Every structure is written in structure tokens, then in C-alpha cells.
Image (cartoon, rainbow, N blue to C red):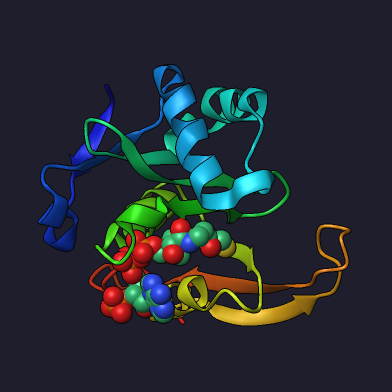
Length: 174
Ligand SMILES: CC(C)(COP(=O)(O)OP(=O)(O)OC[C@H]1O[C@@H](n2cnc3c(N)ncnc32)[C@H](O)[C@@H]1OP(=O)(O)O)[C@@H](O)C(=O)NCCC(=O)NCCS
């Protein structure tokens, strides 16, 4: 397993847990947690498998041995220096223990170390939990995009730029 570090703080509230890169052996556990989080909008298995193959470095899971409690998936844009957060989810039974923040902290630190100038994401306007999390680590709403997924529902785009100050909590400045 490609361990990227033991998380500190509230993540320990439910016993040992650590953040590591996803791997092919996680496929079914990933699918289970993704379905628990996103229901019918969960990624199909074959897409998850391709994400593991292509984005493994920026595909992080919270491993509580067993099961997986959540994941964060990010990717560098091919046409710019910015990265995208493509997915973030924590199992409904494991929320409010700090896992989401821990995943974001680790993911953003890796993207910054890998040269991203900033990170973009989209989020449903009514998703208060996610918006509060993103705002608390420096993301700002930059636009509202109607019909973002072609389903009539709009999304906020949020962006955070990395600063030069390596001492900021997660390395992101507003
Ligand atoms: C968003 C999500 C990942 C947060 O995960 P989590 O592990 O519960 O979050 P944390 O415990 O690390 O909380 C971090 C911060 O998020 C915000 N937050 C989390 N849950 C919240 C809630 N129910 N209401 C308001 N703010 C909330 C708070 O700012 C919190 O900081 P605080 O504890 O200091 O107040 C989780 O709710 C989730 O999986 N939601 C469904 C999937 C989703 O919406 N993903 C994002 C798509 S863009």
C-alpha cells in the first residue's frame, strides 16, 4: 500500500485511520462508499477503475481497515496550471469527524507540491456542508454555471489559489 501519512486530530476519533492513495484492490470498497455518498450519481465501476489507473497519485482514500470511509479525487488540467477537485465524499455514518477536511488538506498539499497554481471545483448551491468546508480552507465562489451537468441544475464554481506562504494551514490563500 502506498501510504501517504497518518492523519492527526479528529480522524482518530473512530480508531486508527489513515490517508493513502487508492489502488485497484480498493475498487469494490470504493464503489460501496461512492454509492453510499452519491447514490445513483455514483461512478460506475469501470470509471472508478480508470480513475485509479490514471489519477492514482491524486486519488486518496481514508482507510479505516475496513472499510474505506471516504475519498478525494483530483486531476491536473491538461490545458492550464490549475487542478480540479473531481470528487470528495465521506460515508454518511462517518461525517463530522474531520475526514472531509483531512482529505482536502492532504489533496491540496499534494496538488501544490506537484505544481498546481490553484484548484477549481463545482458544487451544488444547496450543499451547505461542502461549501462551508471549501470556504473554510480558502475557496471562493467564482461563478454560477446553469445546467452544469446538462440536467437543468446549476453549480457554483469555486476556486482557490495557492500562495507562496507555506505556513498557511492548508497552503491555500483566498
Ligand atoms: C462534504 C463532506 C465531504 C464533509 O465531510 P465531513 O467528514 O463530514 O467533514 P468534516 O467533519 O471534515 O468537517 C469539515 C467542515 O465542513 C463543514 N461541515 C461539515 N458538515 C457540515 C454540516 N452538516 N453543516 C455545515 N457545515 C458542515 C464545516 O465547516 C466543518 O468544519 P467544522 O467541523 O470546523 O465546523 C460530506 O458531508 C459529504 O461526503 N457530503 C456528500 C458528498 C458531497 O457533497 N461532496 C462534495 C461534492 S462538491
